[in-house]
Length: 109
Length: 116
Image (cartoon, rainbow over all chains, first blue to last red; front, side, top):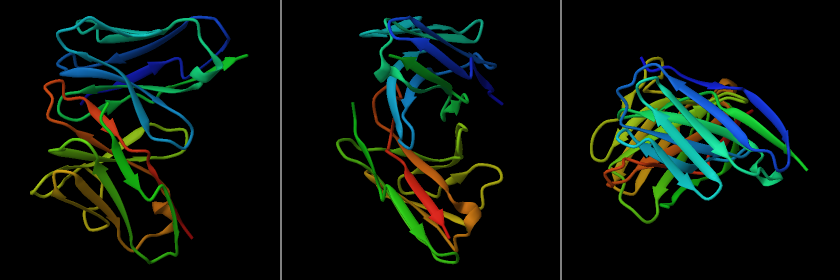
């Protein structure tokens, strides 16, 4: 069974600092990996999807890397802003997503 | 990205009643939809996978008769919580998988169920 772990569970940084969020998974036979953002009481917003053949994806200030062999993915958020405060979830997919517990980020103004 | 709409966004009901939650893919056809449950400060727990035109596949420990899932068309899946009890109170989220080769999933806004 796929186990997905996210470290740290919570993170508080001052505005402008770069964020590094980690995700690890136990079964490297994945189809893709997605990073999501969830605001309190809301659904999930897809941030980035990395297919198993890719090593990274970038969108604006966000960059996600994938190392299948070591079972790791890292989400980098550059120059954080208070609006980046949310819970970030990673999920891996063969066929159905297995979610990590998330990292709750607080960016202080 | 694609849009998935969930309705209602919140519902309060009395114990013993049934509640239906709808999940619609607005601008794409979803061959597969997933239903999740989320407890406060916890991650999403997959409840079941529904494929259009066939029976849903439930995860271990999820009561099929309690949580009825119907995926009657390529744009609509419904979750009915039957004879709801306070312990069924939770945040329910659906997601839909489109036909693109990436297999990207798109999520609804979630439905907050409170059973009194």
